[in-house]
Structures are given as structure tokens and as C-alpha cells.
Amino acid sequence: MRALLVEDEPEMARAIVARLGRSGFIADYVGALEEARAALQCHHYGLALLDRRLPDGDGLELLPDLKRLQPGIRVLVLTAYETVSDRICGLDAGADDYLAKPFDLDEMMARIRACLRRPGAEAPPPVVLGKLSFDLASHQVSIDGKPMVLHRRELALLEALMRNSGRIVLRNQLQDEVYGFDDDVQGNALNILVSRLRKRLHDLGAQVEIHAARGIGYMIARAPQA
Image (tube, rainbow, N blue to C red; front, side):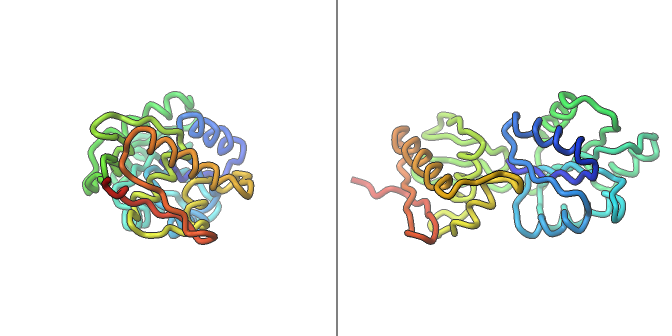
């Protein structure tokens, strides 16, 4: 799952991004509301973590944009505002949970897991192709009913392809979906990742194929029946 962190303290942001990465998230970090709004126009996020005291306003101002542009997104507010009235304000504004600073990163992850377990108001149906099923709400993948475990970048790549099954997804779009803002991406990294995912799907009998449009992008489609 891709996560958006809006936090203006660089040291704390780096620690949160690292912890999210160890838990399988691709995390984008921005330090202001306007940067966050720009990110929302470019990427699909399943999770947002918002600081409130930002250089250009209160993080709660972003909640209407989050809910409008990213239906089903879960929002955890991380802030030094810790009074009961502050927490009530954040939750009433649409946040799923509220965590006061300073906090333990393990508790943060536990609260994130709890938020993600809650059913969304507009949960999309799973995308099914061949024997492959991708649940867009829970980010669970199965082949012929059996769970498939993927590394976070493989999962992000497969999600981008499955959301656009039968259509070519441009290379730069895939790179934006698979890699975070601060990742150092080598020239052939995407090709290697696609090859690895293609082999895994074939070996597990998913009955799908990932086709390359040379120099343009990739497309996933159902494999032709013998």
C-alpha cells in the first residue's frame, strides 16, 4: 500500500517513513499542505498520516481533499495537539484515528493496522483475471483461492497493472506507483521487477500474462487458453 506522510519535522518524518517501509508500505513524505495536494493529484493512496501544525496551515484542512480525491483512504492524525477537544476536532473532521506526539512507532503501526481493518464506505470489488484475484480494499492477492505473498514493490506493480487490466500502463506511471519520492531508481529496475513478477505469476499458474509494449509500458491480460 502507498502511504502519504504530511510532516514538517524531517527527523521524525525519516523515522516514520523507515518504519512504514519495514512494514511493507511505499511511503511518500511531504512537508506542507500544498505539496500534499499535488501528491494527491498524482498517486493513489490507501493511507495518510497528517501532522496538524504545518507551515501553510492545519493538517485537518487537507481532509476534504483526501476524502474527495481518494475514496476509502484511511487517515491517522499525528500531532502535538493533545487535548480532548483537539482529538474530538480531528475525529469529527473525518480522521480515522488520532495519535498525540511523542508516540511509539510500534503503537503507530498498531493503530494503522486497526484503521485498515475497518470496512471502507466505498470498498471496490476485487479485480479478477484468470485465476488471479486482487482485492483493492485489503490489498490481498490470491491465485485460485490460495493467498499469494508479494514483496511491497511487486504488490504495488501488480496493483497498478490490475487496476488497468487490458490497457497499457506507461513506464513513468508504473515507476511513480512502485517507487517512493526519495527512492534512487536504477535504469533497469522496473524491467527486473516486471520479469520477477511475471515469472512468479506463471510458476503459480495464475493464467495471466504481462505484456511489454517496447519502450512504452506494460499490460496485464488473461493468458490465452490452450
